[in-house]
Length: 454
View 1 (cartoon, rainbow, N blue to C red):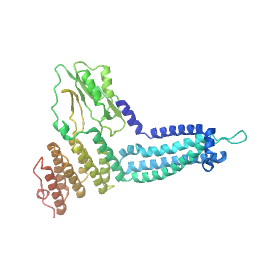
View 2: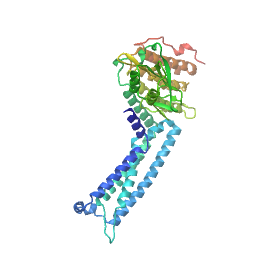
View 3: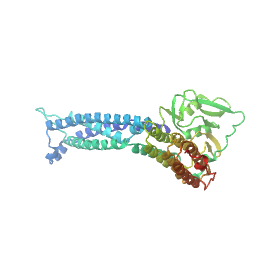
View 4: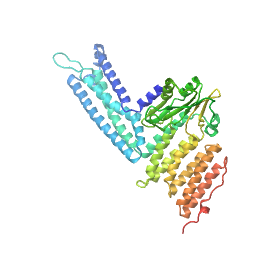
């Protein structure tokens, strides 16, 4: 089942799979309609001469025109897609290109044009006329006319879709929605539903006589997903503990340790192959089990917007807003601890994300690029206040409190104007008031830490 899911994830992220299926479907449709044009059907179609009464020359000319025009449209569509990909890569980040490739709209539109082209070729070669007899598949020709009309509408819709999807707000929103869907899929339980990363147990001691044996990676690439059920099953069958040495999203290097297993003797070849096959390693990161990758994409767009060459604070603020939405949803979810047990027996020690690591991924680099930017610091503080309202966990509120302290320290170093510092101090006060329900640290005051320059 896990391998089938991997295959499906690969197929849905390619340009060719959906168009290929649609081309095959158009071939089946054309052959079926041609076969339906029997004597009985011809008699029924003769009742509608204005719809189905075209002769051989007219039908052949129309289907040939449709085929040639569809090929031209396919070329124009590919050109538009390449321009969009180049623009998105240069202005935002290359990591969002895969989202355009995975777009169902783009794949469906390409499949539509290619399918109509193939359909027209099959139909036009069956049209015959002359002294030896004539044959016109009237139903197939009429359906071809309808498909061509629908393709024209699809082209207009695709132009609108491209113009909309290239806007930065649409790109960020698409990544945000996909990331929140991953949060719902990977962390479905609320905080009260069971153990979580805040309650991490101490590292266990392996039984006497056993030691950790390393299992290396079989290639270079990013760890895209891990079959947790397979690791638990292998640990149960061999009465041992499996420990992940690299997390999802890390770059695995060939022959470098990927996972360790506690055994008295070195693991046999069968166990090594089974452990290695539980890890999916590819050329790029994916969002299937890697929430941090979605956060990373939004952060990259924000960093590009905050760069001196771009200086687009509005886009960076938009990125913080979406990061706030993702972390707000995550704040109320239980992130499983690294120790996975079965019937009270420890089976697997994983390396997974924590709330603290995801908050750091979202805000650390953006905060570092926001020196002197009061608007960005105010928005970061507002995001922390909103996230704090979504959780009652003291540990998670301490994480947010630490972030607020770091923003306070950054503002103290880089903001000179008394008015701006007073705005930041007022926002800091609101953040600490939102945090103090479960954790009440000492509140710093920006104005009292340094005299304003004159």
